[in-house]
Length: 247
Image 1 (cartoon, rainbow, N blue to C red):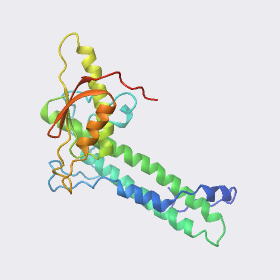
Image 2 (image 1 turned 120 degrees about the vertical axis):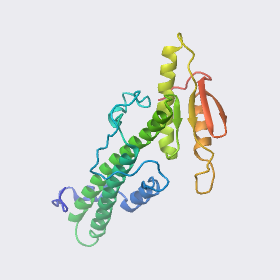
Image 3 (image 1 turned 30 degrees about the horizontal axis):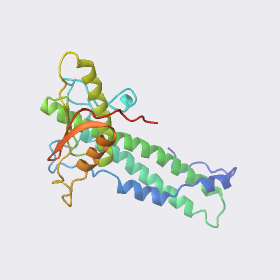
Image 4 (image 1 turned 60 degrees about the horizontal axis):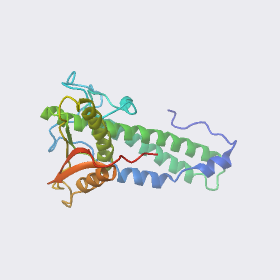
């Protein structure tokens, strides 16, 4: 990517009008980012960006979190720490583009409309990286859950420790849908085990207030799942009513 794209004057007024509020974007992005991985208190060591992102070889059982809609964003061999690191690298690049966009936008004041095109270019490129960074964060989130399953040899386990609320909501919806599909297919042969979702009680939160537990329990209940919940653990046992249609 060229550091300074070619300026154009055609359509400069519309480009100026479409310039996004860069400062607001970067503040929102930084507020919602996951902390960067460290070795302290983490069983998994951070890997350099040049390391193999898919160590460990084949998994004992396939991942059951994803479906065809998001399969291209997940690899069974994903390392969660590497994926987090990759996400932060991309989002750091995004932040730099947003800073350049803001600087170019400020430079348009009293100096003609040419710089507006540069600001819009940097902003568009930053938004592309924002999407990529969030995709890598989701890959990390799914890989974290998969790692817990492998460690416990339990495909019906969804341990949400280390995930943000947004990531947990996405992963749980994917996991419970896959679990129900498996349970339906094997219903005539063997009783399906409940899906065990570990949310925790907030002991690792800064203010020691549980956020995942009430949010995930409410989400499952609204989606029509029959659950039992206690001590930060939710057991999904089936459908409590007709599943609501998703428009």
